[in-house]
Amino acid sequence: MDILGLSTSPSSGGAYALILNETDGKRRLPIIIGTFEAQAIALELENIKPPRPMTHDLMRNIIQSFDTFVKEIYINDLKEGTFYAQILYDNNGDVLTQDSRPSDAIALAIRFNAPIFVSDHIIEEAGIESDPQAEVQDEQEPTISESKDPEPSPEEPSPTTSKESRIKMLEKSLTSAIAEENYEKAAKIRDELNRLKG
Image 1: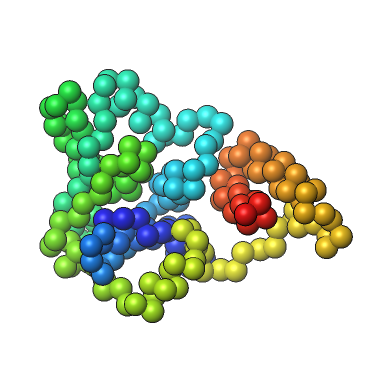
Image 2 (image 1 turned 180 degrees about the vertical axis):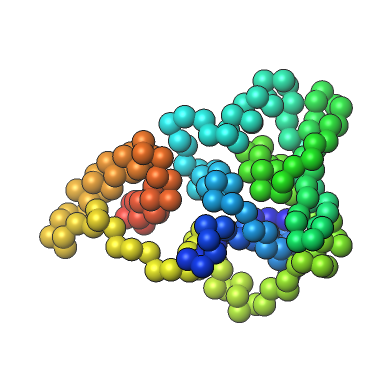
């Protein structure tokens, strides 16, 4: 499976839906995860490096310090609406497994570029078929989307401000947002910088 994206809405109570997409198929699997785990996944997907290691970065560093790496993750069960996963480690050729929440397993998997697998019976039970119309729309949308309209950024300059000074101002705001650990704001500023520079 590939990570298609994360989405939330004001009515979700702070929870996010992580959408997995079949690599060689049309089915998708939505998994509801918490805000912290969504942030950990989003930071790595968006390639935003916090000034200090966050929990999943620390876990990666500890795992690597034992000459071990995450080989793959496997979402293997679904009971009463709760998904279960296993992390498979490679330790000098020995394969070790550990029980995990899917959100934590996926946050680690993307830090190790490890593949994500889901049991067929879970896809059949909880997966949804994607339609071609939605796929075209997904290609035009960012990885992380919210159902509410984004608020205008207070850093928006007046029309008379030059492009160069706007870039400098956004770069300063990006540094500030990362220092304040406001990663959602940092991702939006980074996207705007990429648009201006690109």
